[in-house]
Image (tube, rainbow, N blue to C red):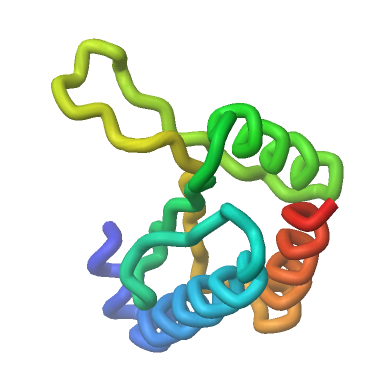
Length: 117
């Protein structure tokens, strides 16, 4: 099904890469001066937001809550305690091809406001 979607709308993949780059670069800039970082390939539609400091889980949960109040749904990445190598706590961010430039820039601006509040 996914290949059919791409075949019928090849520009969708181009938009997805562009949107991924906008969000990745925009959040890197927005997080400057904070302990929040974004990690993932700049063209990947899946990015992780980490907090490099004390109380990472608390800070990430607070950001999720603040963004939800602003109308954005962010998802925490949780892992089973039984896993041998548990990754660091993060927020998993999925970028979509359907998002407009204005929507992306508003999201980035809102994230910046909330990490500094």
